[in-house]
Length: 583
Image (tube, rainbow, N blue to C red; front, top):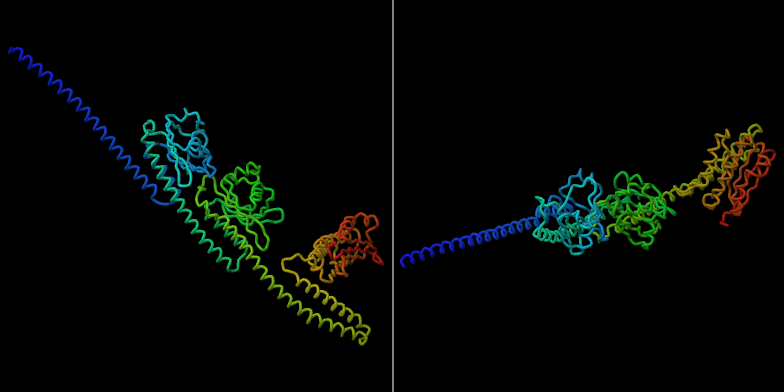
C-alpha cells in the first residue's frame, strides 16, 4: 500500500505539472493578446493623434490654395500613400475642374498631359460619393487605364469631401507603403479627415469671399476717385478690367463696346497674347453673344469657354482661348448715351472657380464701366460746349468787327474809283476784289468755327479734294463755299457732292487741258448746288453720257439731278443739285 501511495503521489505530481504547464501556456496567450490589444490601442492613439495634428495643420491658415495642398499631404501621411490627389468637382457636379496632386513631379505631370476630368474610377466617386477601396485599380470594370508616362498605381482609396452646401470634391490615394492594401482603419481615418477638410474648405471659401468683397470696396473707391477728376474713358476702362481681373482671380478680363452690328474690344487686361486684341472687331452673331441675348440681358456663366469656342470652330481665330475655362459675362447697364457692350472675365484651366460665387462682382464692375463711359461723355460734352462758346465769340467778333470794317473799306475804295487816274483804276479794282475775297474767306472761317471740333466737315472734305488734285492739274482750283453747308446739307447728300467733285476734277485732269478750274458748293434756296467749271476743251458727248451715268443715277435717288453743259466760250460745267430736306 505504501508503494501504491507513492505511485499515487507520483501521479498527482505529474498531473499538477501538466496542469501548471497548460495554465502557463494560456497565461502566455492571454498576455500576448493583452499586448496585442495594447499595441492596437497605442496604434489607435497614434493614429488619432496624427489625425488631430492633421486637422489642426490643414486649418493653419485660410488661404484656399495652400489649404488644399495641406489636405492632400495630410491624407497621404495618415494612410501611408505614395501618391495623393484632390479633385474639385465643377458646378455641374459631373466633372473635375481642378486637380491638386502629391508625389508626382512637375516634369512627370508635364509628360502625362492634361489633368483628368473625372472619367473612369474618378467619375465613379463623383456619381456615387461613397468611400471606395480597391486592391488593384486595373481590375475594376470602370478602369480606363493610365495615359502614357503615368506612374504605375495599384491599391486605391477614394473618399468624398463635402461642405455645408454641396459635394466639394474627392480625395484619391494610391500605392500604400510596402505594397499592402488600404485598410478599414485607413478608410475611417481619411473619411474623418475629409469631414474636417470640408469645414476648413468652407471656412476658407467664406474668408476668400469676404476678402473679395473688402477688395471690391477698395477698388470701388479707387475707380470713384478717378472719375471725380479729369480722365480719359479708355484709361477708366483699363483700370476697371485690371481690377476686375485681380479681384476675381481671373486669367483675363475685357470690355467690349457695341458699334453698329459689331463689338469692339475696347480694353483688355491679362497676358500679352490677349492684350493684342484691343481694337479687334467681333461680329454680333458669335455663340457667346447669342447666349447673352437669350438670357434677356442677365449675367451668364460659361463653365468651359475653350470648349464653346472649339465647338463654334473659332479656335483658329482665337487660339488663346484653349487656356480658358469658366467665364462670366455681364452686359453693361443701359446709360443715357445708349452705348451697349459687355464685360467678360475668364478663368484659366485648373483655377479655383468656386470662391465667392455669390459676390456678383462682374455685374458690379459692368455698372462701373457704364458709369465711366457716361462721366467721360459728360466731360467731353462740357469741354465741347466751352470750345463752341469760345468759337461763337470769335465768330461774332469776326463778323461784327472785321468783316464790317473790310466791307466799309471796300465801299470807300469803290467810291474812289471815279476819282483816280485811269492808270490806277485797275489796281484799285484788284484791291476791291481782294477785299471781297478776304470777306468770303472770313465767312468760310466763321462757318468752320460753328462746327464741333471732331465732327466731319463737308467744307473741309471739299477743300481736301481740291488740294489733292492741285498737283495733277498743275495749279490750285478756285474754291467757293457759300452758306452754312456743314449744318444744312443732309448726311446722305454729302457723299454725292464729294463724288461729283472728284469725278469732275478727274475728268479735267484727263481730258480738259484746262488752265483754270472753279469748284463751288453753295446753298441755293432749298437746294445745295455743287458746281465744277473749267475752261478746257470739253469732255465730249461720249464721255458725257457714260462717265457721269453713276453720278446721275445716285443724284436721282436723292431727288436731285446732275447737269453737264458747255462753258462759253469753251470748257465744261458739271452741276449737281440736291434737296436740303430728306426726300
